[in-house]
Image (cartoon, rainbow, N blue to C red; front, top):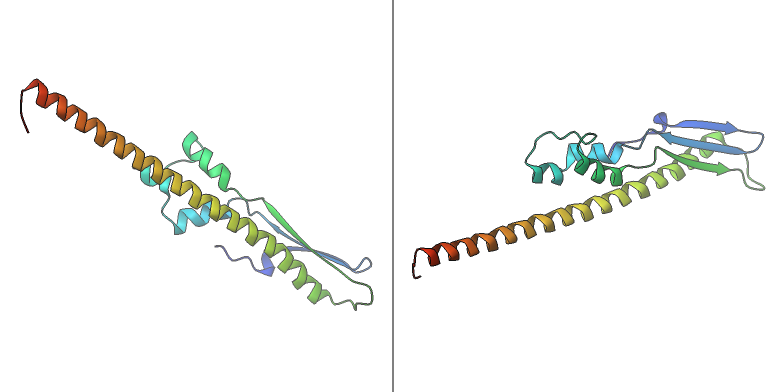
Length: 150
């Protein structure tokens, strides 16, 4: 997972209203990039290709669309009644709230990815079983046509 540090975030501070907002932006492709770099891509594996353009390939586009994350996560820290203003603490709190939303989204995409991977394995297994059955039927027909006994 790409590390997001506080320097990669945009902060909006309004001391008069006692609000600090943290915006983590540009995250829509982060899970996809993680999968492409760290995990064997099952669609690429089953297609027998080393490089597949997910934009042009409709099969890849269908799977990758489910793995895109929102492009922005926002965390807000508000000054409570009787609290003392501390901008540094507000920045950290807003950051952690935005990061929690990011982590939940990343986890959701990971769960989806493994569900898709499992479905692709099932499809590959079904195709192999169907091919094996067809091969057995063809062998039986060949034996019958040649009058061979087993």
